[in-house]
Image (cartoon, rainbow over all chains, first blue to last red; front, top):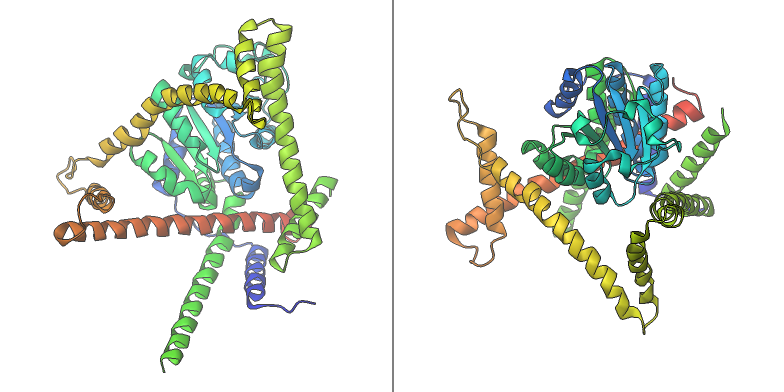
Length: 269
Length: 204
């Protein structure tokens, strides 16, 4: 049996800390950032019945972080009576996107084809983004369920981005950049994003230059959004664990540096 | 509890067992993840690309123009034999040429021109108060750019400016690293939430 090393104690400490905090069930009072507020305001201020496109541009591995973000945005959009057209430009995001949309639509008693539709996956994301700017029908002749796009009532009258209120890219990588470069720059469609925290600094310059209208970043962004909509979810539940785990990391960094300085001093002596 | 929750819970614990040490259970879960990901992606790409964009339009709808991309695509496989490898340069040339043609104008617009435009904001707001954020952005961009200017030695005032630029770089790297830590913690918290609620039913 291998003996427990110091790193194992660090992991055990982190697990116990997160488990204890989750069992407590306490929620932090999170103030929404301006980036998250922009997303809320954008969806809130769209005329009821507007059509939004939501693109699931992420892998399955980022689901724990992406899910609360996507659910918070979907719930807000559906609750405002907006129509949603879903798609995926990442193969792994295809079924995840469909299940998330279907789940939230069921919560609100919405009907597939009338209130929302899911177009499925299209390879070659740049070609897909450009192609939808010309014709969504030609890019996706069938939806995810194999129905002809002409048979979906929601898609009647929606030909390209001109009939779309905005595109929300749910991403864990740089794919949203392509939405801005090819969708926004060429077809002038508004781009909004819900991304993992690791990607926030990548998209901040685009937000600052108004190439992106709003950005919801990571678990914190999800918690902020849930606060705005007043509906508790995975973001709110995870924020205390997030904060305490960060304090734990900070404590370890501090202890590590103290130990390092002490050992260096001993070495000098 | 449905079977998918049980499988997901067991696989999550199998992956987390790596934190103790590498072991066969982790290896099995890792191989399963890679296999399922590749298998799923292959099926999706086969149906949405090969079948929907090539086989059905070409053979069922008779769109003969698709023979050209089909031939170009098949030529990519010529790389596997030394005698025919040079033929693969043709589809690669088409891809690079068309790709660059599409990408250069939009990337120049989105990544350069609009970013420059956003950098040169009025330093004083409409109400007459100085816009500190705009000033920080301007100084940060100029100092960081000066660090990457290597045609002149980094000495004197220019050297100080370049050094100041490295501080902005460090701030960026620090922020990015902080966000990455936050992202990884979120992933762990997400799985912990799943284990404690859906799998073990310890929390609501």
